[in-house]
Amino acid sequence: MKLTRRQFFELGGCLLGAAIIPRESYANTKKYATFIDITRCDGCQGEEIPLCVKACREENKERFPNPKKPILPYWPRKNYEDWSDKKELITTLTPYNWIFVQKVEVEGKTLYLPRRCMHCDSPPCVKGCPFGALTRQPEGNSVIDHNLCFGGAKCRDVCPWHIPQRQAGVGLYLKLLPKYAGGGVMYKCDLCDSRIKKGEIPACVIACKNQVFYFGERKEVYQMAYERAKKEGLYIYGDKQNGGTSTLYLSPVPFERIDQYLVQTKARFRMPVNIPNRYHQEINPIGKGMVATAVLSSLAGIAGALINRSQDDSKQKEVDRDEE
Image 1 (cartoon, helix red, strand yellow):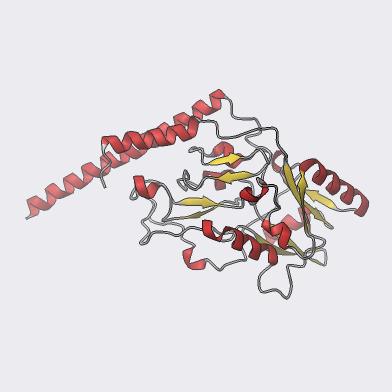
Image 2 (tube, rainbow, N blue to C red):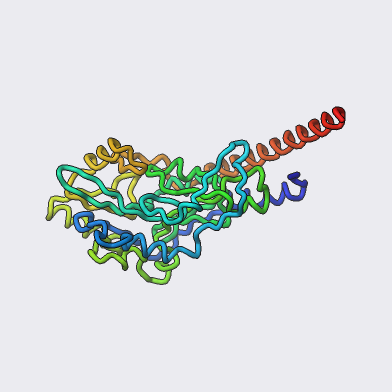
């Protein structure tokens, strides 16, 4: 594939615009949070699928990726991430499964932890995305714009929990540079963004039969979690991790012990306790300039790679003609 001059500048305008246009909104609206009481979660024993998982999949099924095959490697890499043959997998996070229930054995207790995006107060995924595909909404949740995402996975790299998951063979890059740019699109929980904007409750919260989830205005949720923790001797997770989040967990055992178990069992998703936030300040004009510079550098790199690839192809054709 050859990139024309027009295509190059169209691509540049698209990416640069996404990088420098402020996409976060801080309107005066309700901020929400969730606390997840794992003292009440039994993993939906007896159910074929945990009800929160089932509800999430049903709510978001129309937004799941439908990759175009054959999927080309993420050039210059020779591999790609394809979960399309594992759509029914519910024991981990995938582009088709945005919440799962993690089982741990700690201090003689069996605990079940519903795991999904934490929706950080100062989300590294939003700050670190070079294409502006992620935004933090006024309600406190972070959202991926699948129409802008190039699947570079920077969001997953900077997330302390590595939540976003990538599916190749979908996304904007297929229309622009299908052979050279982008790894696909990243997917994760957005806290049922369309629902909460209408004043409705996330699907996972409604579906839970044991009232494991409590969803409401942030101040109320934090207050209830702190009161429960103090009254019942429970431990809290998510209020300080990564600078604070909109997702709190209540546990009968320390989260250090939970994470030790996850480390020992080589779990794919952990719960580290001491997590500093590397992007604690809001993006300022200097930061936006750095993002724009990064985008332009990436674009220049793509262009250079295309030129080199084109030159290599031309040389190879000359060699082929000489051999003939």
